[in-house]
Image (cartoon, rainbow, N blue to C red; front, side, top):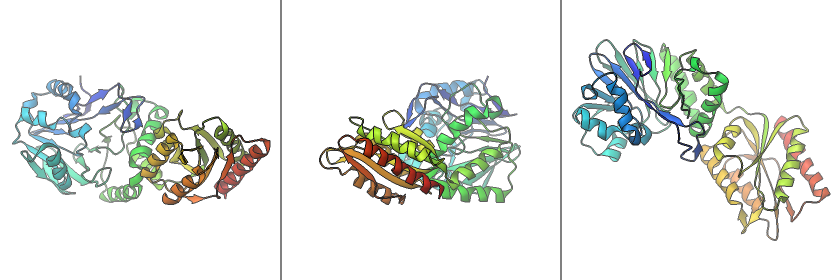
Length: 394
C-alpha cells in the first residue's frame, strides 16, 4: 500500500536503501526518490525517479491506477534522480501527453531527452486546473538548479518542494510525525549544508516571497526523505536560520598528517581553542567524510586547516576538503593554517591563499614547524589555538 498523503494524493516514489555516495556526499542512511500521483478528473504524476528504479515506480503507480491513464506529468526539477524515468514513462503514457516544466526546465529536459515531447512551459504563479484541484507553480530558480520549481495543490494545501526541505534518508517512516526530530533533523541539516548553502541568499528571498503569498501549507513533500506534516512551517523557518549562516562559538581543526607531526600540532591547537571556552573539534581528513565536515562548517565560526607539505603542495586529502568547501561558499567564518614540513614548507602559504580566495579572514599568518614539533613548539601550538579561540569569541 502506497502512502496516502491526502485523499487522492499518493506517494509512489522508491527507497534507495544501498546508495552510500551521492555526488561526493556520504549517504549512510541511503535516500529516496519521491514521486507523487494526484488522482482527479485529470491524473497527474509529479516528478519521476532515477531510471534504475523505473520498474518499481510503475509497480507503485499500478497499485493505484493503470499507469497509461496518467494525463499530465510535472517535472519540478531536471536532475536525473527525478527525471531519469521520463523517457520510459512517456513511452507508456504517450509522448503527446503534456509535460509541465519551467522555461529553463524545458531547455534542460530537451538537452537530456530531446525535443520530441509535448513540453508545456509554466511561469511562476501560473495555475493548472485538473478537476477539483488547482495546481499553482512557484519559480524557485537556483534552488538548487536553474530549472527548479515547486508545485502547490491549493485545495489540499500540499507543497511539492522538489529538492528543497529534503534529506538523504531511506526508511519506512514517511512523515516527520513518524520519526523523532533528533533522528531526522541532522539529515536535514546535512542536506542543507552540502547542497543548498551556496544559495543561502536566494533561500532567504524565497522564504520572504512565500510568506508574502500567504500560502496555507498542511504538508511539505520534498523529493528526498520524509514529508513534513507536523508543524510543516518549522522546516521553512529552520531553512531561514541555516541560510543566515550564523556562526556559533565553534572551531574546526581539519588536518591530515604523514608522520604524526601535523597531528600533534592539531591536537595542541584544539586544546588551546577549547581552553577559551570555544567548542573545538579536531577532524582528521581521512577519518571524517568531506560532507560531514561541511555539516559542521555550517554553524562554525573558525575553520583551521593543517597540512604537511607534500611535493611543494598541500596534502591530497586537505586539497579535497578545501576544494569541496570552496564550492559551497561558506560565510561568516575566520580561518587559520598550520603544518609541518621537511625542506620546503609551502603548505601554510597555499592554505592561506585558499582562505583569501574564499573571502575568509585570516586570524594570523599561520604556524609551521620543520620536522617533529618539540615541547616548545607544542606550547606555541597551544597559544596559537588560544589566539583563534579569542578571535572566535571576539
